[in-house]
Image (cartoon, rainbow, N blue to C red; front, side, top):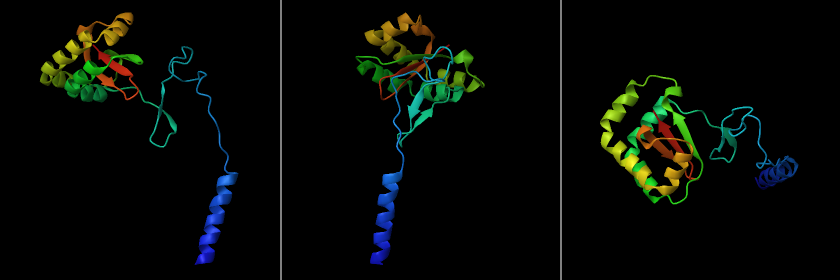
Length: 155
C-alpha cells in the first residue's frame, strides 16, 4: 500500500512538472471579441474554473428574467456610484416571441417605474445613457454584473 501511494505521488509530481502552461495577453483585442468593430464578436466571460468562454447574446427569456428582477435592480442602481461598461440591448433585435415579455412587463409595472426612477436619479448611469442616446422611458429592464457592467434592455 505504501508503495502504491509513493508511486501515485511521484506520478502526480512528474505530471505537474511536464504539463505545459500558457499565458494569455488580455491587453490586446482578439478577433471575435466585442469592441473589435471589424469582427463584431461577443465579449469573453470567465467561468467558475477561470477559463475564458464566449457569452451568448441575450434572449427574450433573459429580458423576462431581468424584468422580474426590476425591483432588485432598482435597489442596486441606487447604490452605484461609478458605472463600468454600459451595454444597450434593443429588444426588437432579439429573436423569439415577445408575448411572455409583455406579460412580465404588465405584471411588474410598479417595479419598472421604480427602475426608471432609480436610473434617472443615478448621475453616473444617466450620463452614460445620455452619451448613448438612450431615453429612460424606453428602458424595460437592467442587469448589473459583479464587475459593475450594466446591461440595459430597451424597447
